[in-house]
Length: 367
Image 1: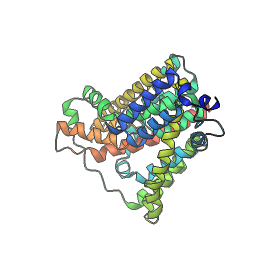
Image 2: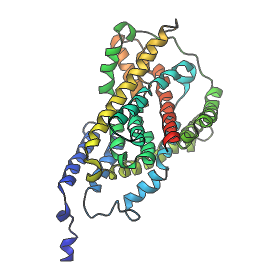
Image 3: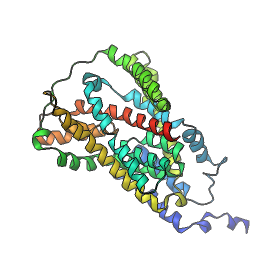
């Protein structure tokens, strides 16, 4: 009799079956559509195993995946390690060659703050609103980092929303770009940027760390690791550390992060009415962020003879380098000889900094 009581099949609920379908959908999107497969595949599998009864994988203090979540996410370990790898991959040259592009990355955080107030209007708490708003930055690790501290019960839904919209950048952004720009604006050819010296690239992560952490100390876990990774890259003397941060370490932490985040999406936590609002508000945040970057570029063009192609403003969201590639692609549709990718990378990497700063501000005010 005890054997039959331990059969998981007897403890299956309708909600679990629904979550199996959600898990299989995420796995399909990762494999069949190649939408952010590095994250959606482990997240999807985490959702699946978390909704298989009696496994004990998420039992507090005992479960294997609970340990991944507790020590990796709640203890703020895994997201900063992801940022170490991102920093090792990042080239700040396009931003340093045209510092004015940092304003486009800042403007693209408009969706984060607008959605923060919109979420409050829908009845979410301040902490929940901040967590939902940060989705507009299109930065998965930052969303997870903030959610784990301000609204852990929304972690799974917000993380899936953030990574889903990151994957859908090529679908979501082009219609907004075409709606808010004329064909003539999309044809604007930006002047060739100056060459950035190795010394400038070397000093940037050190200087940026000092300035940003003095202004927003709460952003330190992510920003410090991001800039350390970039310092590895630009120093040219720690190739082994750079390679490890870019590849082995980042791949390992991505596995643990994805499975742990997915495992938070139990039927009880996910099958709620507010989850629908989270996905809707997250999409709105992403769209508004895209529009804000575009519109600021158009505004800046009113005061300068050195015109900015407004499309690069849309790359101010933190989906690196996908948003920059989309900006280049839409620009090439208007003028095949117009090469915007390197210009778009400036707002793109500054958007990463902007989203982390926004998260730090929310933590300072609400944490």
